[in-house]
Image 1 (cartoon, one colour):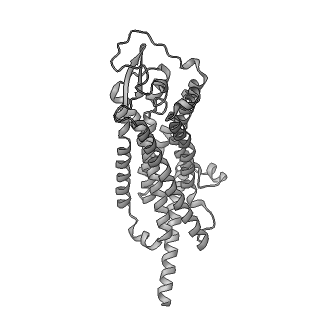
Image 2 (cartoon, helix red, strand yellow; image 1 turned 180 degrees about the vertical axis):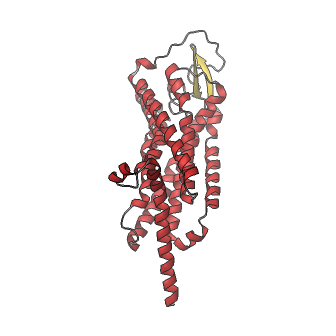
Image 3 (cartoon, helix red, strand yellow; image 1 turned 180 degrees about the horizontal axis):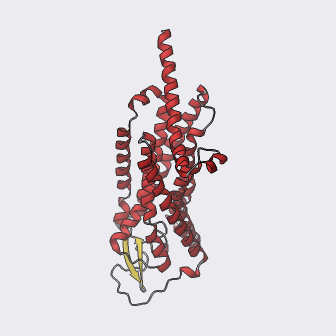
Length: 345
């Protein structure tokens, strides 16, 4: 994950800066993070995100991948947990870079670590879109879904989503570079391929990784809630609590990041310190999304008393499994209704 490293070097983020790709280290650079309140605060936040996010997502992978029966639902959530786990696994690079205020991991890791951040962003939102469409189709066409909704097909869809996410992460491999200035080595963006490379990349990420997916998700949810309300097939919204929370968390965590990235396109109109601080806070909020996902798996789906009565395993099984059980009950109910209708005919 390159959340902070992607914009910690904001003042030297482009070729207009003073970094040289081949400058020899003449000056001794000293880290200044410990003298800045914001930097120290974000450092602490990233340490917490790494520790809890890494362990939390590892637990989700272990339970959904090895302790639960393999279903379409567990396939979705296992893939999402893997995305967040990989993301959290690279946070130590950001922590080290923040503490030393110097990039010591070389050009390849500069490109690779940054790409992981966007791989997580795109894979997460694409998976959330897939889950939303899956829920919508299950409600709209229950009988067809019961026959066609298989783990094998779900796995194929997940692979396609990951391939698309990898494709959307390629710009980081292209535009990230390592350069030195006054003894300081930085991993920064060098948009020199095209005059409008920066604008194209930022807008494409915003549209493909936020706007279009969110519109699809909202349309799916509108259809789902309308259908359920019309048919009165459920007395509560429990089956959709986990998914709803995941979508809301993604929106809250990633919106500030995208807002400040777009503002950065016209950086001459805004205060430099506000943009720098906003980008740093926004990227840390984006990183926090990988911590929130496993927390929501555990604590959503049961009431307060049940959380303290059940084990962590049963909490997570309930959070991820009750959606499948509810949809199965709904599908069975719909099938029996269809059977009765055909009998009358």
